Length: 323
Image (cartoon, rainbow, N blue to C red):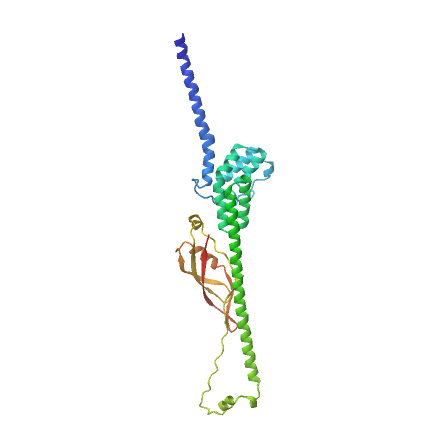
């Protein structure tokens, strides 16, 4: 009888074990694997790939505050699939997960997702800093701080943001100072021209008896003698920049931490527009050329003048690309 009982129990035990194995496999494919794939997709399929910070034009859901926990988690997963990790504001995965934690503090799905995607999201915020989109970078850093306020990466990001802001302020001050110096030179040239014209008018208005002896001698000279021509003074001014557009730092160069410069040549026409932009030299070659040309084409100038008349001017400018 005992042998008969052991024989009957063995199929039951095997069936129970098979059911547990099937449940474990189903849990992996239906729960764990989809969640990991969502996290991996946000990084372009690999954890070391930086998150894209492009602002995707997706309409935000209506009345987010009224959503329940499951709806918030569903919107967060959808945002992850669309690579909307930190942006746009009000319609990204981080904000939906944080709202889910407000509904249910300690929710494991939201907590795990925020922790696992934090490094990739921080990389996206760094790209916004390097692109000098300071308002967006500050918003993303504040959002990251809500997810993990003690993370040391936030200190690094804030330092980089402050350094880039100071660098931009310095560059703008240098550009303004250059414009001021050019304007002073133009004003001086205009004043010299006015003084020369006034002196010429005064000499022309002098009575005949007060003319210098050289002029009298010239008047009494034989008709065949050619008078010495008086050279006309030419007054020129250089173009003065009125609109400066900062070149965009290429994403490829940002990821590779590569710096360089581009020397461009171009023409400023009589309307102050830039045309004929060409790369004269660059280091490294071809990496920053396109962004440099795109920026220079949008610059504006007060045109150069020759004796008060606008003229075309050939110019060259060296553009630095620094992290």
